[in-house]
Length: 630
Image: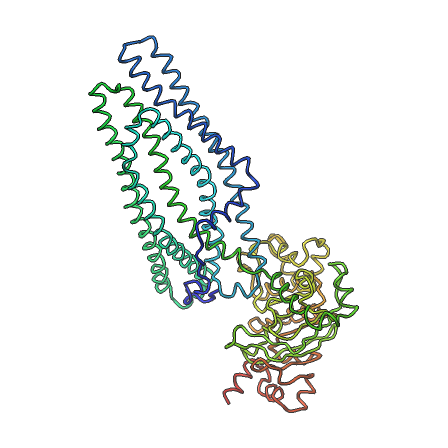
């Protein structure tokens, strides 16, 4: 996802939707109707009952004209009109029941679709999100799911009723007057040809429109998240222009769709009107020749209206189908993405064919079969681990390390050395492309992801807080924690005092991404969250460089409490932190070039010793940059 409000408004080209056939789209979307078959059948039944009531209108009209008005039979007028009004009442009653049932069905299906898409997003690997824009994903979950639902609900109900209506009316027309029925079908080739043209050409237009909508939403979300940067650099006009360009793309895409519809819809309406005109022409000659009555002609014309009306509805459904097809492709791209568990299963399948399975120890077996809540000791071992995003982008090469339970391991090195990638392999945010990672002797690929991540807490350099209360954010570490545990974690993280000074205390809202709290306050809340989780392994990216001295001291004290008794991996920035590490790993270009304690590394007078001399009181990463410049 783009993190800077001047870059990457378009979604990643690699995330373009894969074309799918209409049949596949309809089949896969149709699965969501299966749990609600009775409701779907009910909506169709009410629609058919409403249609049956409407079918009485032409016959009763013909009777009024031929038997009441022509023969001046005033006594029959009231009963016939009562029947006609009754038919209208029943038609609207069944329509109302259909709408109510249809709306309930519609919302149930939307809920199921949206929850399935969101659940799939939750189960996708972290690396999958690295190349996707958040605004684009939101568009898929909200707008595209709605478009899919319209196809499912309206397509099923209206499509079924329209087809049955056409067949029923056509039967009546041929039974009533075969000659006029044949005349009415003369415009049919125009209707079929127009439908084919629109169907074969519309999909591309709708796809462009959906992509333009996603690009605009992606830029909007990016800019809202980066609003402080936009204002600090005075780039409001620049971003206005960029958003205007995305909005213009969407306008042009929408207009392209509308232009095609502005040709297609009137052409189909003209074809229908042509049929009615031809019937009136030939029917009029038959009335003049006394071969049919005026009432019979009016009856035929009314039935003909009931014939062309569902044809027009099918044209509208065709438009909806093409829009839904483009939206469905984008949703199915998410639904078809490989889940984390699937990745792990694939790896397990590969390793099971190797000698790993034959050498699995008794402790591995006991851990795999123990209670999911059992706490692991926290012994971590990397064996010749490598990682690469692509053949051209190798990040880690031959990483081997051993961290005993409770030990602190500091990782130092220049930007891009692979420090973050190394620790991200531990909770399986990424999968190693070679080598193995073990916790307590168990290959992490053999552990269920939920079990694995229960054993690891992560405190990031830039802490993320959800848009809720402080209480909710701390309890995220352990949802069933007691009030006493909550307060204990907050006190240990040195945040209890500032929380109690707030008007709403622990129920104070932190705002989006914790914007209502200072950097130091957010960091201490995130430490409290990690303390409450009480995992045996800790991944820590220190974040004290941008806070004042007093806040730094509070955070350092909280971090020391957090690391006590835990196996800690610290991406270190300050020399004061590194001094206390049980082992220091110096990374450069994806390899460990030095390892040892602070004193040992100083004594060897290697790269680390040079960096320590350069740094003095500066950051380690700055030292690397200075050394590289020399």
